[in-house]
Length: 138
Image (cartoon, rainbow, N blue to C red):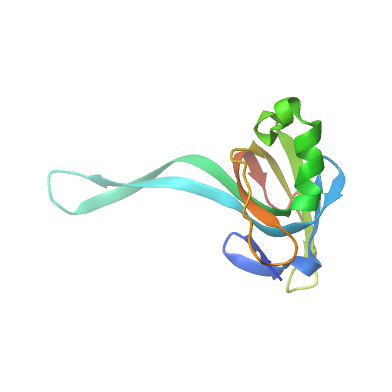
């Protein structure tokens, strides 16, 4: 069983509900979050005297079973998930304090492909081009 990783904390995928534009999907893994640029500022000396921060960059990647991705491929332009316009990915789970957490990701597929192994149930991990990652939207 795979994990869902949200800002470095792992949750069991069985406890996570995931929807793509409102349609439930079975994810095998999902990693998402935001990174903020940080920079040390220097004056005349060699040591940093202060720091500053810059832009925030969202990131995401998702593992999906082939039985969920194949219909998307067939329905997309040119049978390529790379042609699918940005979609809303809603992630819902109960955290360690028994609180319902809902996160919202706006992304599109950045990679496509297959990983064929001897394991039952084919799956693939896809890099997503994340436009927005909002944590705790409800």
